[in-house]
Length: 272
Image (tube, rainbow, N blue to C red; front, side):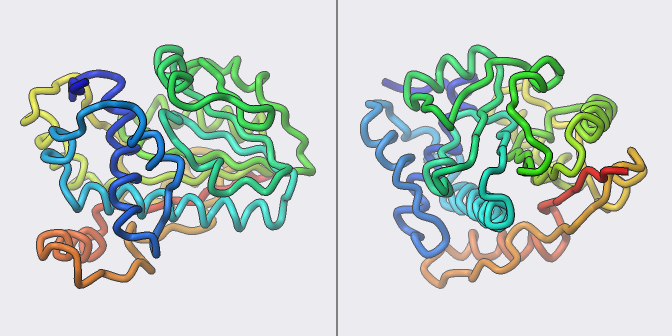
């Protein structure tokens, strides 16, 4: 079965493909056993995705997953019964890599995305799906949350597509509802968002425009007195550049960090 790159399913399958193919070749960065098994067994043709996104695309997906894994592991080491909410989960497989046996995990995504997810990844008692829009605050009530146990929200490759005003309002609501919680996500600079939009348009897809960007993450603290930026770092920081990668991939990895095109941002919701 071939994949339409303009479909909702494709936007979910692309990162899954990236994690599967790149983690097989770079297990020192990340090994995503579940993604590899899904790709091998789903009977779909990923030729066009591989041609479009290439080696650098795959590397970027496993690095993002690795940074998120590391953040979750550090959080649940302090909060072993924590709640983790994966915003815009798609076909994410993080739970299978980080589960400590006691966390509660929620995959939040639109109903059609969750329907497709369930054809490939089944829910389980501590790893359940919420089929709602991120902007539908009723999902707050679907999340079992004990303040003492801690809550961490993660989002990978999702916030780019939101208007800043939309995201600001939602993060303010989350900070109010989940005091002491934390949020970890990736973001592009304005320069990078402009490049990304031009690249996506070249594929013929004009319905996936990116809006949100961050040049200086500290500006998030202006959104609310309840927000504190714990840390932020360049996308590939701490990831060794492999000599076996193509020269273009090595160049992109260095360039992205040099001019701060991509970054990870970690925010805390203050209790005051």
